[in-house]
Image (cartoon, rainbow, N blue to C red; front, side):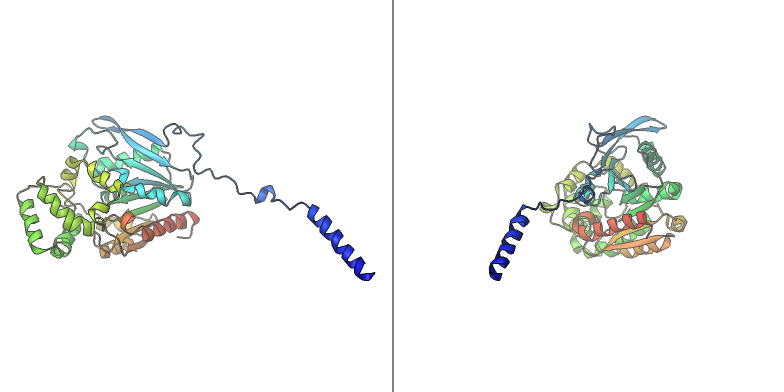
Length: 351
């Protein structure tokens, strides 16, 4: 009898237990939808974030291309491409890393670059002009000291430094990628350290072509691409270079590049207007939180880059041990981890 009562109790418990409804998550436990990709209330929704911004110059008004990715009122990064005369395409790899962190970033082609107007006016090819151009872009995009991070790579690093030296009160953070603070030191590093690493016959032929200013000779490009660029610009076989990098080179405005940088990335040669550029003695006036990015195999001396990080008042150095000039492609893990940490540390007040 006792056994029957126990079995009956178990049966009743199972019967009523099966009828109980499972607990459901409360509204507060359901993840809220992120507004990072919500463009619904923005004036650039139809264009997918693209804005052509009018730039006023002494010689007229021209439009420059910008494209916003994401929404974040506290972390907005304006990207300054290299060259001069390069394009925003060098930063396409950012699409694979920053959206997941909900960091807003803005592509931007400077005046006379592929996606922007091309007045082709050398009187505008000065650091002074481009600094004021960046300032006009900043105002048009409503970037300010509470959200504005400025990132410049190579020539873009020159521009970022020059901007910070004049307008650092507008900045929340500064990122200098792969650019020394001295053009003469950059050329010296290419001449004395990187050049001798090439085969002797290759270096001799390159020097002869440069002496004759035969820069458009296909042999000049061939030697550079196969013996210098694959070692110090992007450490991949040419056939494996990402399409974005191929487009960067295809779309390069060679006129402004030659005028300001010279014929190649092998130092600054010829009559390049940036040949004597140097702000090393002014870095100590930059108080904005600053990340300086160098790479072991870069065209830029990583030891100089580390010195720069210590020279600014509030700096951090990031070395990409497997990278070269385009670290976002040949050492992306180190680069993006370091970049994201810097942006968030500054935003959270822990830098």
